[in-house]
Image (cartoon, rainbow, N blue to C red; front, side, top):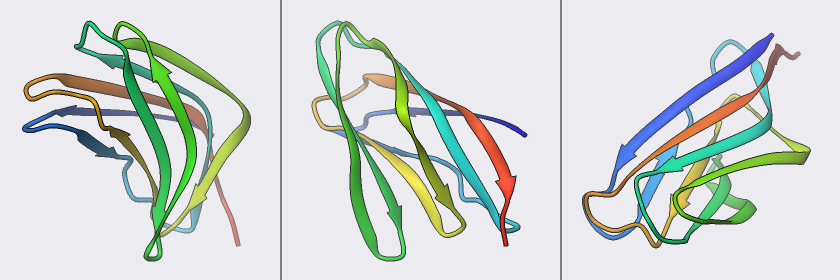
Length: 110
């Protein structure tokens, strides 16, 4: 089944971390594309990590030029219950905002 998610946030200080939603009912998500639209005019860094079970595992770092970028993943990001993706923008300034769009598939497991 097709999976889409939009994550929106605005920095209240230096840096911004946005999280994907939690999964329920023994599902897994296979993310194929990540798009970022940030209300910034300069190059920013994006760090994507898997968050769950007491760990944070960096899976992707990306440079975002002029606030907009699409990442087509050559190897999909897969996560399941009790895990979520986190998107950290360390260079974002106060009152700058970011929208992240995830596209992929979801399916039951187990």
